[in-house]
Image (cartoon, rainbow over the protein chains, first blue to last red):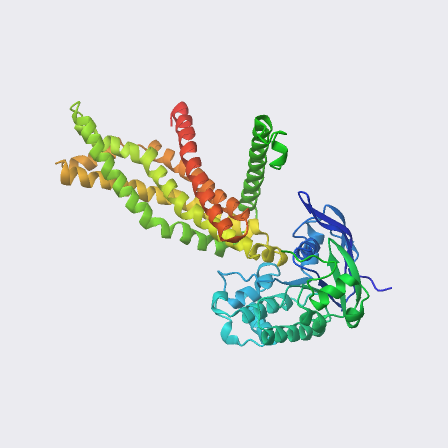
Length: 254
Length: 271
């Protein structure tokens, strides 16, 4: 039996009377790529933030490599964070730092790597995402949206994590740039042998980067299967979402 | 508590529930603020420190506040001298202008004006910056990169404000006194040498010390209010704008309130 690198067991999270997560069960095996689909407001981002430890679940457990990290904010959680990477929807680059300082932030501030070595490694990571050394000294505000995503990806992979989270990696990008980002994600995740969890409602992206796809609806995982089965899932909710129909069991969020 | 639960069956607000909800809300907010301030102070006075960030904040908070503090101080000092002269002349006590100017500037006005200027320039600036970082997920990104926002973001701002505010107050004291001197010599026919000698003779170390102690406290309050409101900023431009406004208003009110409390305390212990 393969141990899951990340496991969510019955995770619940509410904000006042709004029950966003109602018992999410999910596990990700090492080296596998899982994409979680879901409409706007379905709780995808909340699920991700709980998994990352940015929020604490009201109920349920989160296990990382077999260790319970649900309520831990100490060494176990830090050890987890040292083994994960995260690409935020907006890239979340630090405005006050240069590109290379963003990419090597963890190396300098958590791993104690000297700035000279950190810059060399940042430039190498930028090269992996097809960005030249010339961007290293720029500020994030000087980059296009696609370039910011690439810098965010470089920051996520620089410490060679075992698990990478992607929050809407292609949102706000044109189809060609989005496809290039998808290619980079596949290349880097497979290259590292890492597991990945992506949340998106971009079906083109999901089909391309996923080994498996899960569907989150009303705070629960209602379907999960191989990426190839997504078009004949037999689940009316998944069918409606995949084909982007307004008619069906899912009510549009407007 | 929802609006529905604070209304009677007739649709009118139930005053007791409304008051109760307000009191509970205030207590919760005060609790959150106290906890937040404790965490900032713990991060500020225990390792690890980010020296580069502290230095950068000292430049942003201290150095770049010099023009506004200097200008405010010179006008306050000048206006103070004019008003003391006007009041003093009714009793033939014009000669006390330098004494009262230096006392007022060093004990109260230098530090209060500096505190109020920084409540506007620095506290609101910190709230807007931290708020923008909050809504663009940069603070979440810090956490995922194993950096504690209290150590990396808030403690450097707190330490920078606590260190630079007393320095700014010294500058404000000197410039404020010189503002009074300038007006007295140029417009009120005081002798320059006599004015300065009276100023130096009357000024005591305790007066300056009282202002500097207040400055340390105001620096901490200004930084904490900026960080707190920024950290709790709601999404969107409105949320960040509201955080900046709340930060400035609360810091300014606290500066004035704490100034009175500390003046009373200093008076009671003879400082």
